[in-house]
Image (cartoon, rainbow, N blue to C red; front, side, top):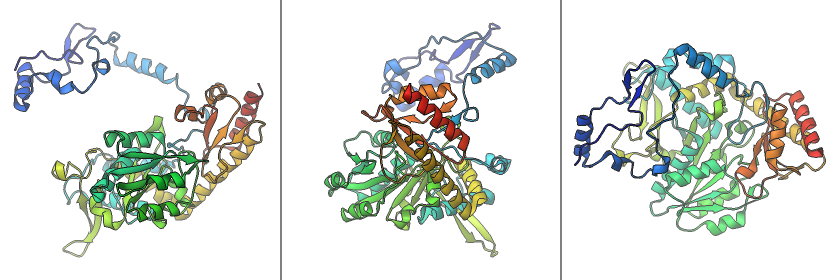
Length: 469
Protein backbone atom coordinates (compact mmCIF):
# COMPACT_ATOMS: atom_id res chain seq x y z
CA UNK A 1 0.00 0.00 0.00
CA UNK A 2 1.35 3.42 -0.89
CA UNK A 3 1.01 6.56 1.19
CA UNK A 4 -1.50 9.14 -0.02
CA UNK A 5 -1.57 12.87 -0.10
CA UNK A 6 -4.42 14.73 1.51
CA UNK A 7 -7.05 15.13 -1.26
CA UNK A 8 -6.80 18.67 -2.63
CA UNK A 9 -10.51 19.14 -3.37
CA UNK A 10 -12.10 20.94 -0.39
CA UNK A 11 -9.11 19.92 1.75
CA UNK A 12 -7.93 23.44 2.49
CA UNK A 13 -8.35 27.01 1.38
CA UNK A 14 -6.27 30.17 1.67
CA UNK A 15 -8.48 32.90 3.09
CA UNK A 16 -8.33 36.58 2.22
CA UNK A 17 -6.22 37.03 5.36
CA UNK A 18 -3.58 34.56 4.15
CA UNK A 19 -4.41 31.82 6.67
CA UNK A 20 -4.89 28.21 5.58
CA UNK A 21 -8.21 26.79 6.78
CA UNK A 22 -8.53 22.99 6.65
CA UNK A 23 -11.85 21.30 5.98
CA UNK A 24 -10.72 17.67 6.51
CA UNK A 25 -9.92 16.56 10.08
CA UNK A 26 -7.99 13.43 9.02
CA UNK A 27 -4.20 13.35 8.82
CA UNK A 28 -2.31 11.32 6.23
CA UNK A 29 -1.61 8.72 8.93
CA UNK A 30 -5.33 8.50 9.73
CA UNK A 31 -6.19 7.99 6.07
CA UNK A 32 -3.51 5.35 5.51
CA UNK A 33 -4.62 3.46 8.61
CA UNK A 34 -8.23 3.40 7.41
CA UNK A 35 -7.17 2.24 3.95
CA UNK A 36 -5.12 -0.54 5.52
CA UNK A 37 -8.07 -1.65 7.64
CA UNK A 38 -10.44 -1.98 4.69
CA UNK A 39 -7.77 -3.48 2.42
CA UNK A 40 -7.69 -0.69 -0.14
CA UNK A 41 -4.46 0.54 -1.62
CA UNK A 42 -5.58 4.00 -2.64
CA UNK A 43 -8.29 6.55 -1.91
CA UNK A 44 -8.89 6.63 -5.66
CA UNK A 45 -10.28 3.06 -5.50
CA UNK A 46 -13.14 4.27 -3.31
CA UNK A 47 -14.37 6.50 -6.14
CA UNK A 48 -13.77 4.12 -9.05
CA UNK A 49 -17.52 3.87 -9.79
CA UNK A 50 -17.82 7.63 -10.35
CA UNK A 51 -16.80 8.76 -13.86
CA UNK A 52 -13.85 11.15 -13.69
CA UNK A 53 -15.72 13.73 -15.76
CA UNK A 54 -18.32 14.00 -12.98
CA UNK A 55 -15.84 14.46 -10.13
CA UNK A 56 -14.93 17.69 -8.41
CA UNK A 57 -12.18 19.68 -10.10
CA UNK A 58 -9.36 20.25 -7.57
CA UNK A 59 -8.87 23.74 -8.97
CA UNK A 60 -12.19 25.26 -7.97
CA UNK A 61 -12.97 28.64 -9.50
CA UNK A 62 -13.96 30.32 -6.25
CA UNK A 63 -14.13 34.07 -5.68
CA UNK A 64 -12.26 35.82 -2.89
CA UNK A 65 -13.61 35.44 0.61
CA UNK A 66 -16.37 37.75 1.88
CA UNK A 67 -17.26 39.08 5.26
CA UNK A 68 -20.55 37.97 6.78
CA UNK A 69 -22.17 41.28 5.87
CA UNK A 70 -20.88 41.15 2.29
CA UNK A 71 -22.05 37.56 1.90
CA UNK A 72 -25.53 38.45 3.18
CA UNK A 73 -25.85 41.22 0.59
CA UNK A 74 -24.54 38.94 -2.18
CA UNK A 75 -27.05 36.19 -1.36
CA UNK A 76 -29.86 38.72 -1.16
CA UNK A 77 -29.06 39.98 -4.66
CA UNK A 78 -29.02 36.43 -5.98
CA UNK A 79 -32.38 35.69 -4.32
CA UNK A 80 -33.96 38.74 -5.95
CA UNK A 81 -33.33 37.17 -9.36
CA UNK A 82 -35.98 34.54 -8.56
CA UNK A 83 -39.70 35.04 -9.10
CA UNK A 84 -41.56 33.43 -6.21
CA UNK A 85 -44.99 31.83 -6.30
CA UNK A 86 -46.26 34.76 -4.23
CA UNK A 87 -45.21 37.16 -6.99
CA UNK A 88 -46.65 35.24 -9.93
CA UNK A 89 -49.85 33.38 -10.73
CA UNK A 90 -48.79 29.74 -10.56
CA UNK A 91 -50.50 26.86 -12.33
CA UNK A 92 -47.67 24.40 -11.73
CA UNK A 93 -48.34 20.88 -10.49
CA UNK A 94 -46.86 17.63 -11.84
CA UNK A 95 -46.36 16.06 -8.42
CA UNK A 96 -45.77 19.16 -6.26
CA UNK A 97 -48.99 20.95 -5.40
CA UNK A 98 -49.31 24.36 -3.82
CA UNK A 99 -51.89 24.61 -1.04
CA UNK A 100 -52.64 27.12 1.66
CA UNK A 101 -50.89 26.30 4.94
CA UNK A 102 -52.61 27.85 7.99
CA UNK A 103 -50.30 29.87 10.24
CA UNK A 104 -51.05 27.51 13.12
CA UNK A 105 -49.42 24.61 11.24
CA UNK A 106 -45.95 26.13 10.96
CA UNK A 107 -46.26 27.67 14.44
CA UNK A 108 -46.99 24.32 16.10
CA UNK A 109 -44.58 22.30 13.94
CA UNK A 110 -41.79 24.78 14.78
CA UNK A 111 -42.00 24.08 18.51
CA UNK A 112 -38.68 22.80 19.83
CA UNK A 113 -40.29 19.58 21.09
CA UNK A 114 -41.02 18.61 17.48
CA UNK A 115 -38.01 20.15 15.75
CA UNK A 116 -35.22 18.71 17.90
CA UNK A 117 -36.07 14.94 18.01
CA UNK A 118 -34.75 12.94 15.10
CA UNK A 119 -34.94 9.16 14.63
CA UNK A 120 -36.07 7.33 17.79
CA UNK A 121 -33.96 4.21 18.22
CA UNK A 122 -35.38 2.93 21.48
CA UNK A 123 -38.95 1.73 22.09
CA UNK A 124 -39.14 3.86 25.24
CA UNK A 125 -38.34 7.11 23.44
CA UNK A 126 -40.20 10.36 24.23
CA UNK A 127 -43.92 9.79 24.57
CA UNK A 128 -44.63 13.05 22.74
CA UNK A 129 -42.64 11.98 19.68
CA UNK A 130 -44.27 8.56 19.64
CA UNK A 131 -47.76 10.00 20.02
CA UNK A 132 -47.14 12.42 17.12
CA UNK A 133 -46.06 9.45 14.99
CA UNK A 134 -49.13 7.46 16.07
CA UNK A 135 -51.52 10.30 15.23
CA UNK A 136 -49.93 10.73 11.79
CA UNK A 137 -50.19 6.98 11.09
CA UNK A 138 -53.84 6.93 12.15
CA UNK A 139 -54.77 9.86 9.91
CA UNK A 140 -52.95 8.45 6.88
CA UNK A 141 -54.56 5.02 7.33
CA UNK A 142 -58.02 6.63 7.38
CA UNK A 143 -57.25 8.79 4.36
CA UNK A 144 -55.82 5.90 2.31
CA UNK A 145 -58.22 3.24 3.60
CA UNK A 146 -55.27 0.99 4.53
CA UNK A 147 -54.46 -1.03 7.66
CA UNK A 148 -50.97 0.20 8.58
CA UNK A 149 -48.85 3.28 7.84
CA UNK A 150 -45.22 3.90 8.70
CA UNK A 151 -43.91 7.20 10.07
CA UNK A 152 -42.50 8.09 7.65
CA UNK A 153 -40.67 7.76 4.32
CA UNK A 154 -38.30 9.99 2.36
CA UNK A 155 -40.39 10.92 -0.69
CA UNK A 156 -43.12 9.63 -2.97
CA UNK A 157 -40.71 8.19 -5.58
CA UNK A 158 -38.50 6.44 -3.01
CA UNK A 159 -41.62 5.05 -1.32
CA UNK A 160 -42.66 3.51 -4.65
CA UNK A 161 -39.18 2.03 -5.11
CA UNK A 162 -39.29 0.46 -1.65
CA UNK A 163 -42.80 -0.81 -2.37
CA UNK A 164 -41.42 -2.58 -5.46
CA UNK A 165 -38.68 -4.14 -3.34
CA UNK A 166 -41.29 -5.26 -0.81
CA UNK A 167 -43.29 -6.93 -3.57
CA UNK A 168 -40.19 -8.78 -4.72
CA UNK A 169 -39.45 -10.04 -1.20
CA UNK A 170 -42.99 -11.30 -0.80
CA UNK A 171 -43.11 -12.74 -4.32
CA UNK A 172 -39.76 -14.51 -3.87
CA UNK A 173 -39.17 -15.86 -7.39
CA UNK A 174 -41.42 -13.17 -8.83
CA UNK A 175 -39.22 -10.22 -9.82
CA UNK A 176 -41.07 -8.32 -12.55
CA UNK A 177 -42.55 -4.91 -11.72
CA UNK A 178 -45.19 -3.58 -14.15
CA UNK A 179 -45.36 0.22 -14.39
CA UNK A 180 -47.73 2.14 -16.71
CA UNK A 181 -46.51 5.11 -18.74
CA UNK A 182 -49.00 7.38 -16.97
CA UNK A 183 -47.11 7.20 -13.67
CA UNK A 184 -44.90 10.25 -13.12
CA UNK A 185 -41.60 9.80 -15.05
CA UNK A 186 -39.57 10.76 -11.97
CA UNK A 187 -41.21 7.96 -9.99
CA UNK A 188 -40.41 5.48 -12.76
CA UNK A 189 -36.80 6.64 -12.99
CA UNK A 190 -36.25 6.25 -9.24
CA UNK A 191 -37.67 2.71 -9.37
CA UNK A 192 -35.30 1.88 -12.24
CA UNK A 193 -32.36 3.28 -10.28
CA UNK A 194 -33.15 1.45 -7.04
CA UNK A 195 -33.87 -1.82 -8.84
CA UNK A 196 -30.48 -1.47 -10.56
CA UNK A 197 -31.65 -1.32 -14.15
CA UNK A 198 -34.82 -2.09 -16.02
CA UNK A 199 -34.42 -5.78 -16.91
CA UNK A 200 -37.28 -6.68 -14.56
CA UNK A 201 -39.38 -3.56 -15.18
CA UNK A 202 -42.15 -3.77 -17.78
CA UNK A 203 -43.62 -0.47 -18.97
CA UNK A 204 -47.28 -0.56 -20.04
CA UNK A 205 -48.66 1.84 -22.62
CA UNK A 206 -51.28 4.48 -21.90
CA UNK A 207 -54.17 5.35 -24.19
CA UNK A 208 -56.06 8.64 -23.77
CA UNK A 209 -54.37 9.06 -20.39
CA UNK A 210 -55.58 5.67 -19.13
CA UNK A 211 -53.75 2.37 -18.74
CA UNK A 212 -53.98 0.22 -21.86
CA UNK A 213 -55.76 -2.84 -20.42
CA UNK A 214 -54.89 -5.16 -23.30
CA UNK A 215 -51.22 -4.28 -23.08
CA UNK A 216 -51.33 -4.78 -19.30
CA UNK A 217 -52.78 -8.27 -19.66
CA UNK A 218 -49.95 -9.16 -22.06
CA UNK A 219 -47.39 -8.02 -19.46
CA UNK A 220 -48.76 -10.18 -16.63
CA UNK A 221 -47.25 -13.61 -16.08
CA UNK A 222 -45.98 -15.92 -13.35
CA UNK A 223 -42.90 -13.70 -12.87
CA UNK A 224 -44.90 -10.54 -12.05
CA UNK A 225 -44.39 -9.39 -8.46
CA UNK A 226 -46.49 -6.22 -8.61
CA UNK A 227 -48.54 -3.92 -10.81
CA UNK A 228 -48.19 -0.20 -10.08
CA UNK A 229 -51.02 2.27 -10.74
CA UNK A 230 -51.30 6.03 -10.17
CA UNK A 231 -54.42 7.66 -8.71
CA UNK A 232 -54.67 10.37 -10.02
CA UNK A 233 -51.98 9.74 -12.61
CA UNK A 234 -49.30 12.01 -14.08
CA UNK A 235 -51.83 13.63 -16.43
CA UNK A 236 -54.28 14.34 -13.59
CA UNK A 237 -56.57 11.62 -14.95
CA UNK A 238 -58.72 9.65 -12.50
CA UNK A 239 -59.69 6.18 -13.69
CA UNK A 240 -61.52 3.26 -12.10
CA UNK A 241 -58.79 0.78 -11.19
CA UNK A 242 -60.81 -2.04 -9.66
CA UNK A 243 -60.52 -4.16 -12.81
CA UNK A 244 -56.73 -3.76 -12.72
CA UNK A 245 -56.67 -4.87 -9.08
CA UNK A 246 -58.54 -8.01 -10.15
CA UNK A 247 -56.14 -8.62 -13.05
CA UNK A 248 -53.11 -8.23 -10.78
CA UNK A 249 -54.45 -10.50 -8.06
CA UNK A 250 -55.59 -13.15 -10.53
CA UNK A 251 -52.01 -13.21 -11.85
CA UNK A 252 -50.69 -13.67 -8.29
CA UNK A 253 -49.19 -10.19 -8.12
CA UNK A 254 -49.60 -7.37 -5.63
CA UNK A 255 -51.22 -4.05 -6.53
CA UNK A 256 -49.25 -0.93 -5.61
CA UNK A 257 -51.21 2.34 -5.69
CA UNK A 258 -49.36 5.65 -6.08
CA UNK A 259 -51.17 8.76 -4.83
CA UNK A 260 -49.14 11.88 -5.75
CA UNK A 261 -51.89 14.21 -4.44
CA UNK A 262 -53.46 12.71 -1.25
CA UNK A 263 -55.91 15.61 -1.05
CA UNK A 264 -57.78 13.92 -3.93
CA UNK A 265 -58.79 11.17 -1.48
CA UNK A 266 -61.09 13.71 0.16
CA UNK A 267 -63.60 12.92 -2.62
CA UNK A 268 -62.19 9.81 -4.34
CA UNK A 269 -62.38 6.21 -3.12
CA UNK A 270 -59.19 5.40 -1.20
CA UNK A 271 -56.83 2.67 -2.50
CA UNK A 272 -57.78 0.29 0.30
CA UNK A 273 -61.36 0.24 -0.98
CA UNK A 274 -60.49 -0.97 -4.46
CA UNK A 275 -57.90 -3.63 -3.72
CA UNK A 276 -54.49 -2.02 -3.17
CA UNK A 277 -52.05 -4.17 -1.22
CA UNK A 278 -49.59 -1.30 -0.87
CA UNK A 279 -50.41 2.39 -1.22
CA UNK A 280 -47.70 5.03 -1.32
CA UNK A 281 -47.79 8.73 -2.01
CA UNK A 282 -46.31 12.19 -1.72
CA UNK A 283 -47.36 14.28 1.26
CA UNK A 284 -45.89 17.66 0.35
CA UNK A 285 -49.42 18.98 -0.26
CA UNK A 286 -50.51 18.15 3.29
CA UNK A 287 -49.13 21.28 4.93
CA UNK A 288 -45.60 21.59 3.56
CA UNK A 289 -44.32 24.47 1.41
CA UNK A 290 -43.41 23.84 -2.23
CA UNK A 291 -39.94 25.39 -1.71
CA UNK A 292 -38.37 24.42 -5.04
CA UNK A 293 -39.85 20.92 -4.65
CA UNK A 294 -38.93 20.00 -1.08
CA UNK A 295 -38.67 18.90 1.62
CA UNK A 296 -40.97 16.08 0.67
CA UNK A 297 -42.88 13.50 2.69
CA UNK A 298 -43.04 9.88 1.58
CA UNK A 299 -46.28 8.12 2.53
CA UNK A 300 -46.17 4.33 2.84
CA UNK A 301 -49.14 2.15 3.79
CA UNK A 302 -49.85 -1.59 3.56
CA UNK A 303 -52.44 -4.21 4.44
CA UNK A 304 -52.03 -5.98 7.75
CA UNK A 305 -50.66 -9.08 6.00
CA UNK A 306 -47.65 -7.10 4.74
CA UNK A 307 -46.96 -5.10 7.90
CA UNK A 308 -43.75 -6.91 8.87
CA UNK A 309 -42.32 -6.43 5.40
CA UNK A 310 -42.94 -2.68 5.45
CA UNK A 311 -39.89 -0.40 5.73
CA UNK A 312 -39.77 2.36 8.29
CA UNK A 313 -41.10 2.65 11.82
CA UNK A 314 -44.48 2.07 13.43
CA UNK A 315 -45.58 3.59 16.70
CA UNK A 316 -48.21 1.68 18.66
CA UNK A 317 -50.56 2.59 21.53
CA UNK A 318 -50.83 0.40 24.61
CA UNK A 319 -51.36 0.47 28.38
CA UNK A 320 -48.44 0.55 30.81
CA UNK A 321 -48.08 -1.37 34.09
CA UNK A 322 -50.06 1.33 35.93
CA UNK A 323 -52.94 1.28 33.47
CA UNK A 324 -52.01 4.53 31.74
CA UNK A 325 -52.24 5.04 27.99
CA UNK A 326 -48.77 4.97 26.49
CA UNK A 327 -46.98 4.72 23.16
CA UNK A 328 -44.10 2.56 22.04
CA UNK A 329 -41.94 1.98 18.98
CA UNK A 330 -43.62 -1.23 17.87
CA UNK A 331 -41.82 -1.96 14.60
CA UNK A 332 -38.53 -0.69 13.19
CA UNK A 333 -37.12 -2.50 10.18
CA UNK A 334 -34.64 -0.04 8.71
CA UNK A 335 -30.94 -0.77 8.61
CA UNK A 336 -30.33 1.66 11.49
CA UNK A 337 -32.33 -0.54 13.81
CA UNK A 338 -31.49 -4.11 12.82
CA UNK A 339 -28.75 -6.01 10.99
CA UNK A 340 -28.37 -4.68 7.49
CA UNK A 341 -29.10 -7.99 5.76
CA UNK A 342 -32.46 -8.16 7.58
CA UNK A 343 -33.42 -4.55 6.86
CA UNK A 344 -36.42 -3.84 4.63
CA UNK A 345 -34.91 -0.59 3.35
CA UNK A 346 -31.51 1.01 3.00
CA UNK A 347 -33.01 4.50 2.98
CA UNK A 348 -31.74 5.94 6.25
CA UNK A 349 -33.54 9.28 6.19
CA UNK A 350 -37.06 9.77 7.44
CA UNK A 351 -39.27 12.84 7.39
CA UNK A 352 -40.61 12.75 10.95
CA UNK A 353 -40.97 16.52 11.27
CA UNK A 354 -42.71 16.68 7.88
CA UNK A 355 -45.03 13.87 9.02
CA UNK A 356 -45.81 15.79 12.21
CA UNK A 357 -46.54 18.88 10.11
CA UNK A 358 -48.92 16.86 7.93
CA UNK A 359 -50.65 15.46 11.02
CA UNK A 360 -51.17 18.98 12.41
CA UNK A 361 -52.54 20.19 9.08
CA UNK A 362 -54.91 17.22 8.74
CA UNK A 363 -56.10 17.73 12.31
CA UNK A 364 -56.97 21.35 11.60
CA UNK A 365 -58.78 20.46 8.37
CA UNK A 366 -60.74 17.54 9.81
CA UNK A 367 -62.74 15.05 7.77
CA UNK A 368 -65.18 17.60 6.34
CA UNK A 369 -62.45 20.16 5.72
CA UNK A 370 -60.45 17.72 3.60
CA UNK A 371 -63.54 16.90 1.56
CA UNK A 372 -64.43 20.57 1.10
CA UNK A 373 -60.89 21.47 0.06
CA UNK A 374 -60.81 18.59 -2.44
CA UNK A 375 -64.10 19.79 -3.97
CA UNK A 376 -62.70 23.32 -4.29
CA UNK A 377 -59.58 22.00 -6.07
CA UNK A 378 -61.57 19.84 -8.48
CA UNK A 379 -63.99 22.70 -9.20
CA UNK A 380 -61.21 25.25 -9.82
CA UNK A 381 -59.47 22.94 -12.27
CA UNK A 382 -62.72 22.20 -14.11
CA UNK A 383 -63.50 25.93 -14.37
CA UNK A 384 -60.00 26.73 -15.64
CA UNK A 385 -60.18 23.93 -18.20
CA UNK A 386 -63.46 25.38 -19.55
CA UNK A 387 -61.92 28.86 -19.80
CA UNK A 388 -58.79 27.71 -21.63
CA UNK A 389 -60.48 25.30 -24.04
CA UNK A 390 -62.88 28.09 -25.05
CA UNK A 391 -59.86 29.65 -26.80
CA UNK A 392 -59.80 28.69 -30.52
CA UNK A 393 -57.27 25.92 -31.32
CA UNK A 394 -56.67 25.11 -27.64
CA UNK A 395 -58.01 21.67 -26.79
CA UNK A 396 -58.17 19.28 -23.86
CA UNK A 397 -55.89 16.35 -24.69
CA UNK A 398 -57.76 13.64 -22.78
CA UNK A 399 -61.52 13.66 -22.40
CA UNK A 400 -61.43 11.84 -19.11
CA UNK A 401 -62.27 12.74 -15.49
CA UNK A 402 -59.44 14.62 -13.76
CA UNK A 403 -58.81 16.03 -10.30
CA UNK A 404 -56.87 19.29 -10.10
CA UNK A 405 -54.74 19.16 -13.26
CA UNK A 406 -55.29 18.41 -16.92
CA UNK A 407 -53.46 18.33 -20.26
CA UNK A 408 -53.92 21.02 -22.93
CA UNK A 409 -52.87 20.86 -26.57
CA UNK A 410 -51.87 24.23 -28.07
CA UNK A 411 -51.04 25.18 -31.67
CA UNK A 412 -47.60 26.41 -30.57
CA UNK A 413 -44.75 24.62 -28.74
CA UNK A 414 -45.39 24.49 -25.00
CA UNK A 415 -41.94 25.89 -24.22
CA UNK A 416 -42.70 28.97 -26.31
CA UNK A 417 -46.13 29.41 -24.73
CA UNK A 418 -44.78 29.05 -21.20
CA UNK A 419 -42.02 31.61 -21.79
CA UNK A 420 -44.51 34.15 -23.08
CA UNK A 421 -46.78 33.54 -20.09
CA UNK A 422 -43.85 33.83 -17.66
CA UNK A 423 -42.98 37.21 -19.15
CA UNK A 424 -46.44 38.31 -17.99
CA UNK A 425 -46.01 36.88 -14.49
CA UNK A 426 -47.86 33.61 -15.08
CA UNK A 427 -46.37 30.16 -14.51
CA UNK A 428 -48.64 28.43 -16.99
CA UNK A 429 -47.86 24.79 -16.25
CA UNK A 430 -45.38 22.10 -17.22
CA UNK A 431 -44.09 21.37 -20.72
CA UNK A 432 -44.90 17.68 -21.30
CA UNK A 433 -42.40 17.61 -24.15
CA UNK A 434 -39.71 17.48 -21.46
CA UNK A 435 -40.96 14.03 -20.47
CA UNK A 436 -42.81 12.55 -23.45
CA UNK A 437 -41.60 12.59 -27.07
CA UNK A 438 -44.31 13.88 -29.40
CA UNK A 439 -45.97 16.00 -26.70
CA UNK A 440 -44.01 19.19 -27.42
CA UNK A 441 -47.27 21.16 -27.81
CA UNK A 442 -48.83 19.80 -24.61
CA UNK A 443 -49.17 21.64 -21.29
CA UNK A 444 -49.90 20.03 -17.91
CA UNK A 445 -51.94 22.69 -16.09
CA UNK A 446 -52.89 22.62 -12.40
CA UNK A 447 -55.31 24.70 -10.33
CA UNK A 448 -55.72 24.64 -6.55
CA UNK A 449 -57.51 26.73 -3.95
CA UNK A 450 -54.57 29.16 -4.21
CA UNK A 451 -55.65 30.31 -7.67
CA UNK A 452 -58.14 33.16 -7.73
CA UNK A 453 -60.82 33.74 -10.35
CA UNK A 454 -58.93 36.84 -11.49
CA UNK A 455 -55.74 34.82 -12.02
CA UNK A 456 -57.56 32.22 -14.07
CA UNK A 457 -59.26 34.88 -16.21
CA UNK A 458 -55.90 36.61 -16.79
CA UNK A 459 -54.36 33.26 -17.78
CA UNK A 460 -57.11 32.66 -20.33
CA UNK A 461 -56.75 36.20 -21.70
CA UNK A 462 -52.95 35.97 -22.09
CA UNK A 463 -53.03 32.46 -23.55
CA UNK A 464 -55.57 33.64 -26.12
CA UNK A 465 -53.26 36.49 -27.12
CA UNK A 466 -50.28 34.14 -27.42
CA UNK A 467 -52.14 31.60 -29.54
CA UNK A 468 -53.50 34.28 -31.89
CA UNK A 469 -50.16 36.07 -32.34
